[in-house]
Structure formats: structure tokens, C-alpha cells
Image (tube, rainbow, N blue to C red; front, side):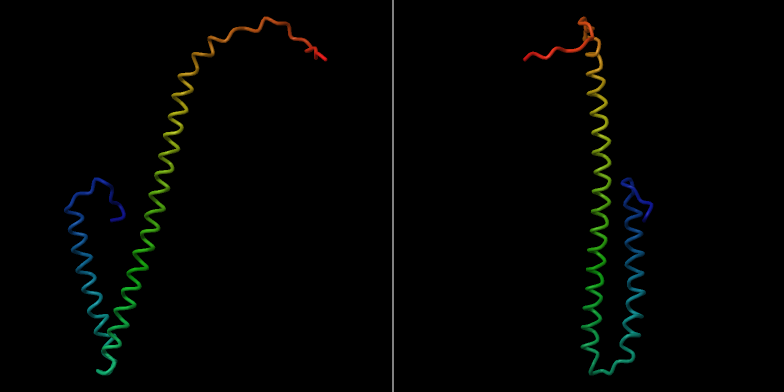
Length: 118
């Protein structure tokens, strides 16, 4: 998925979603079985609550971190596009103003000291 672009087809999205869902099921079931194997039946309710709380906190922190990182990448890419557009605009303005250099006339006054009036 790290090599995807905007042209990715829906087959790849569906297959990766199925594989991720299967992987999550294959990871969390054994994890919960091993976590509750050593708990007494009286503590399983508290253990289940804490496990789900920390799993939710971890998922929320991960989603928040990925959102911040994706937002930073989008801002970085939009900034470089804005700079490129600015340089194109400056080029077109320069090309449009360049012919006006031929309209400038030569200075006919002699170059000498400028007299200051009092």
C-alpha cells in the first residue's frame, strides 16, 4: 500500500482491506486468549474492560498520529505546488514585460555632476 497512487483500482483496495481484517482477527483472538488464560473468572470482567480500553486508546492515538502526518504531507505538497505556480506566473510576467525594454530611449543628457539648488 505504500506504493499506491491516485490511480489505484478498487480490487487492490478490497484485497488489502480483506487481508487487514483477516490479520486483525488472527492477532486479537490469540492475544485475548493468552491475556485471559491467567486471570481468575472473577477478574475477567475487569480484564476485558481494561484490554478494550487500552486497545481503543491505542487505536485512537494511532489514527490521530496518522492524520497529523498525512495532513503535514498534504500541506508540504500543496506548498511546493504553490511555489511552482508562483514561479510560472513570474516567468509569464517577465516574458510579457520584456518587450517594453525596447521602448526605453537613450539618455541624451551629458553625464556630469548634478548641481544642487539652494
